[in-house]
Length: 415
Ligand SMILES: [Zn+2]
Image 1 (cartoon, helix red, strand yellow):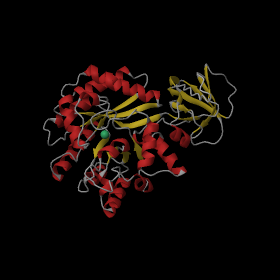
Image 2: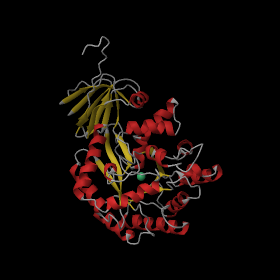
Image 3: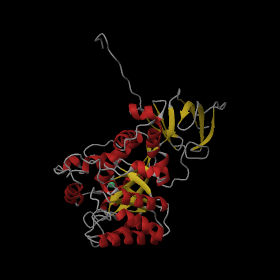
Image 4: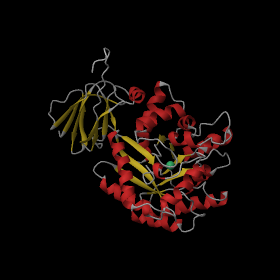
């Protein structure tokens, strides 16, 4: 064994286990392994979980907040507009630097797989993509990065973006993104969606869109996305992020849309940190939470994951790329506090995100890629409650990060 973890609790299993890794994959998992490991980690009852996944972040935009004017209205619209001028000045080197800092923070907190959206439009053109592709190369020993070509400024209303999207896919973007509600009319939103499906089907790519990121109940592109997913035979291959308007729909219409999402096997990603801050800005009281109907989606059998979305950009001034922080915020925002609900929230950063990313070799099972995090806590609930230190982070059987925290209480005042 190249790596042995001794006496770990494993998320989803009872008891204590030894975990043996060979060739970057789990080789054996048993209560006691008699073999020796080239490297051994003594877990002492800590929780071993599959490494976290952040399925929705914007690495091209991270850490720009200090260099632009503040977002005074606090709305999504102003956040997008502030970025126009900054985006036109991006360079590949600074994108690599900013994205790299956040990818390092992600790995240090237990995340080894990330899906990032990257702006593709006539302002920044393909520069954001060039930067994130370079960052992917620079960090390929630490992070698996999926890239989504994201037409944030619209496609119909931003002529030329459709061609840039096609070029982005040829350059190395893995998925086709979308922002269908950012068009001038329902007809143009539908055209936006159709163009995305054309590009995706033409290049054999999956789809991951920003859908109805607004609390306007008239924003109804999610239903069209579900219809087109079935029409194109894309069931299971489409992800919808944000979908805030779903929470604003009348209950009857929301139920109808959720039924269509289940039939189209669309993966849903909620981004509570950003949406709690940006949505409901025009409400007096009560102010809506601005996040999608997480519990109703889960009850209908729809896969739901969660993402950090933003780190210190024009949309959101906080964020540490730490999925335990996202989990804590999501549990509050979606009101998931029962024991089984907390387990589900933990799954939204692990197994549920893996399903959205369509990863075949994810999980703590023999044969799967040995990507895991050992937490300074015995359970998922305690890990979220305590925002537990990530004692070790392992990717493909190699320790890529470790954290040791020292706390001392001085009762007599001595140091
Ligand atoms: Zn987003």
